Every structure is written in structure tokens, then in C-alpha cells.
Amino acid sequence: MAAIALTEARLSYATLELCADGMHSREEVVAMMSQALGRPVSAGEPTFQDWAAKARLPYTDRQLQMLAKVHSDYAKYGLGGNSLALRAALGREPRSLRSFIRELALQAAYAA
Image (cartoon, rainbow, N blue to C red):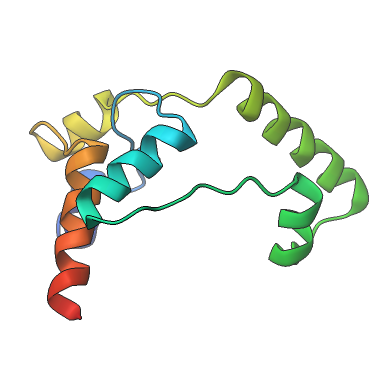
């Protein structure tokens, strides 16, 4: 997608949600990573406060409180994806999350 955006005019001024279909839990993503890497991977769950402190976000206390509410909703309800915009921009079916993770694992193996 980045290559298309940088080399063609058809995406000029576009704002797109670029994601794959589905809604995956942290545990499902870790299982995909473990399978692709051939070794165990575990998922952590830092509190919002711990994450925000480590990220050193340049937000006011009010902005952090609002962001904490967003993260709370994502934790409770998830954040699904719809690949319609990505499929239209690419002109083809996008990779699945599982395929993307496999590709990253293969690249990591070749780099090692």
C-alpha cells in the first residue's frame, strides 16, 4: 500500500482505514505468532497507566483520561477490522493477519 501511495496519484489526499477483516484477541494473535515462529510467545497485559507512562505521551491529564476510556472500550468490546477500503485501494484481496505474521516470521528467520 505504501508503494502505491508514494508512486501513484490515485490515493492523493486519501485517508483510509487499512486493516484486515476480523477481530482477533491478544491470545489468538499470540497463537499465530507462536505457530509462525515455532516457539512459544506469551501475551502481556500492562495497565493503561503503565503503558502510558512508558510511552511518555505528550498529552495533558484530560487527554490521557479520554484515551484511557478508549482503551477501556477496546479491552471490553474489541476493535474489529473491515478490509473494504484496503481491498479497493489495492485492487486485490489483502493479506490476512495470519499471512502477515507468517511473512514477518520468515523475514526474521532470513535476517538471523
